[in-house]
Image (cartoon, rainbow, N blue to C red; front, side):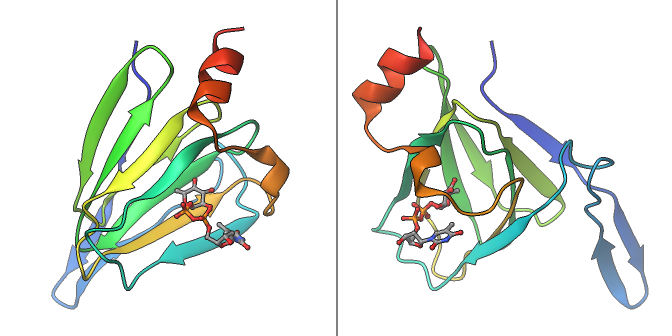
Length: 133
Ligand code: T46
């Protein structure tokens, strides 16, 4: 049982450099309503520590690197992201944490819904109780 999926995005490389495309309903399985990005990171400061009830997300580490913990309540995986042509899908009901964000880390996240704090489960015991219902 896996708790995450890594997508290899196609790199269009030519003498000018590289270009990567992410298209809704083609490269990712949802329409994008919101984009946010995380930068100016401190490697000592971890982020995340929550799951979502409905939100679907796709995260790409455009620069630098970071480690994602992906936990579906039964299995906890660690995923290292350091390639702007790879994205990780964060489905609902996956507890996720981001650790070891490099100083130059630039993490962009494409999200299926507008921001809604009530969609977050920020307490791990509540997550475990609800995910196992
Ligand atoms: C996630 C991981 C991968 C907003 O006001 N609007 C937004 O769209 C977002 C994403 C955040 N915020 C506010 C809420 C907090 O006051 O920005 C502040 C920092 O957010 P948070 O502590 O939730 O950041 P992370 O890095 O722990 O989590 C974020 C996303 O919130 C979350 O959905 O899955 O990145």
